[in-house]
Image (cartoon, rainbow, N blue to C red; front, side, top):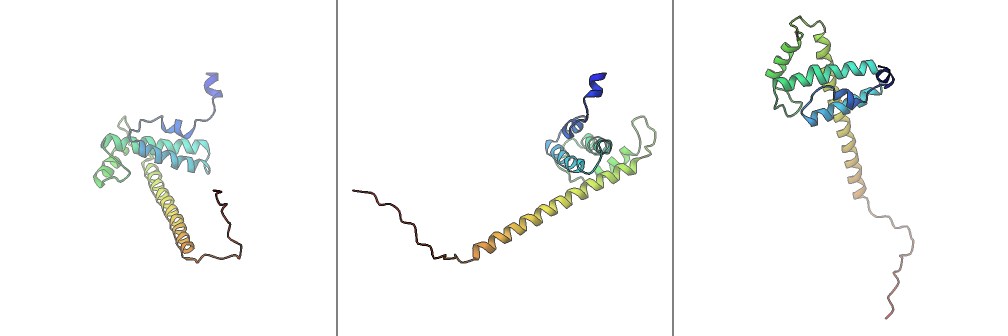
Length: 152
């Protein structure tokens, strides 16, 4: 028991791996998201967020649709997921179902914002590269470097 208490906090990967997520691409996106969120949340909040998104959201999505290839979820699967989270495993109504939906929406909006920021950065870099390519070469007045000639 002492070893368990002394271990400390689990890494983001260890927290996510508590739940069986088959789709490795989605697992990677979740780990990236939780890693970014770790900087602005405490450990208990992070654990709860992983529980919401990895277990209550994505694990259940894969249970409903084992072939789910990405984060684009059909309206039918989303509706089925909402019905699934409305009740606990024992059949009792889930009091915090709305907080699960809010966590999922925040995740999606956060990922969209991250993608938008990346695209904005990449567009700016592309524009800068194109602008630099259009500039004429500047002659600084330095003599050209002569190559040594080979002796015959």
